[in-house]
Length: 222
Image (tube, rainbow, N blue to C red; front, side, top):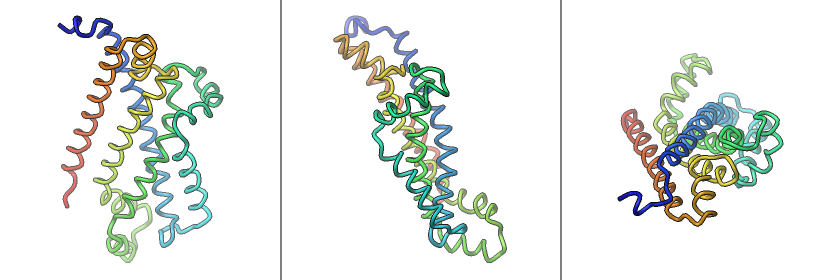
């Protein structure tokens, strides 16, 4: 029945492309999470009234985040071709997509981290400061735990955005479901391949959203 309705679809190829998409998403998400947390903390801590208030540093970090967050992803890939070739040794395949995916998603998540930290009750922060807590203690015992539900929601949104970015990267040679949908589907006139690849992308997105919601609901005590 499946072969009748989708004669051009090779399930082995579909699963392989799915694996590439998941690989690109997970690796880039891990780096985006780490970098985003650091940048988001710096944006929050160096802002007006922050524990490390420093306008010049905050302005510079904010500008860098805004610039890379604003560049359309396909243009970012093109701009980073030389850098990607230098550090990855190639501009094709899943690994070649990682630098652009990380650089494109980390600033996005950094802003979500900053927003999450701003939602933490200032009274709790001031109480910790009045008790003589060090900045590191406030960060790891107050800020991050109190903002954890929002941080998880943010990384869920970032992961879903990354799925879309991997599809764009795939269309210019990174592999994955985006590459399959465009090259084997659209360019070859195989609508069924494009359709199945799209369905698999949607399934991945739904799974990420469900997992993110479950974790957020479990740790959100409000």
